[in-house]
Image (cartoon, rainbow, N blue to C red; front, side, top):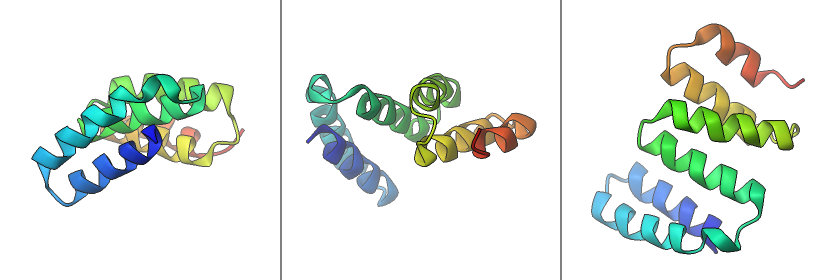
Length: 98
């Protein structure tokens, strides 16, 4: 259920319901030990993207696409994080599958 809580937290963030988002975020971290490595990378990177911390998101997403090269959501989010850092040349390379 940890990934479900991560999605729910993102939904509340998009709806600008920050108090509810914080509550659900705590649930997400409470269940992270039950996630697969891939789910952990996605959960942590999603959190860092929401918190506007692209450098930490890049660390998680780079590890995700290194271990799971076919993860298109990971590649897209890596490009987004690099865009947030204004690293346009690397952003373009991130979004293209190897």
